[in-house]
Image (cartoon, rainbow, N blue to C red; front, side, top):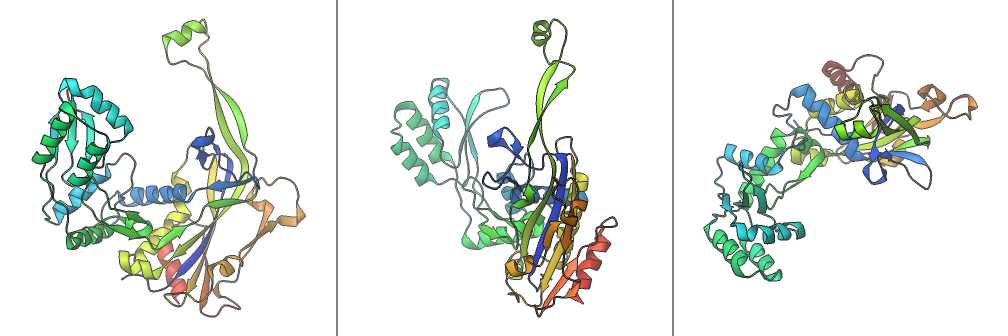
Length: 388
């Protein structure tokens, strides 16, 4: 059964001597707000950690599969789902590319091929053009006209377009695919996904009931850069240049300490559309509490969940504005300490008492227990206590 109440939550986590979320556009420096100097962690980064925990917990088995997983080809997932539903699809076509056309098609690939066309090597390294059974023939022909294709390339593509058997799902088939995706994949059921791929069977679009904000550090952070040394080199050429010294210099970026705060929202209205259940909510809480425990690396240093504070509304649409509830979670420096924070003990975290919230009728507050290992049973007990 899907959840019948709205929930809002505050997540606190910290990092010590690590990089919680590197920015690839800034040399992998920790993300920060340049105006305030406060650190940032993207919602996508947090969702990735939740996905990884769920995958580890349930071994990708339905109904806890993960749609957006590293290295996957999303189109193949769509095809598998439609095959399971016994829905007939178009047939993909692979055509060997004549040698005299390879250079031209490579140039067109760099400019951007239309959806449903892909130039790739086969097992022997020869170029083949792949035509999806879901491509839009009119769109491809228009692309050919816009790029003023002529001669052998035009004849090659035109003949292949005649041969490929295209079949797009009907509206009913698309809806069946969407429902099956929600049933099979936890991250679609939770966060939603754009499933309208032009190069694969269309499963529509899913708005997820769970959404999260970027996390921001409570105080400004300092991004440190460390020079590190590897006592080895990768190639003989490097060894010769160093006359056998064989050392490689590198760089590492860390935050000495930062306490980060993110906000989350759970919509019961959207949960009804995806099938997000109470069991899914329990797994979400379990993931938020445990996700850093199983995401260790030298780059991330020490990261831990320091607080998970949940507000439950007694109705589907909610009984109070989320921002007013979030304001009840106050974080201040402990004992008037103005020195740079270096642990969570440098902060005083003020929260409402557990149970009904004073001044907010029909709102129940829960402080997720982090003093002991979080398990499926403890997550179930926490949600059950909120329901009492």
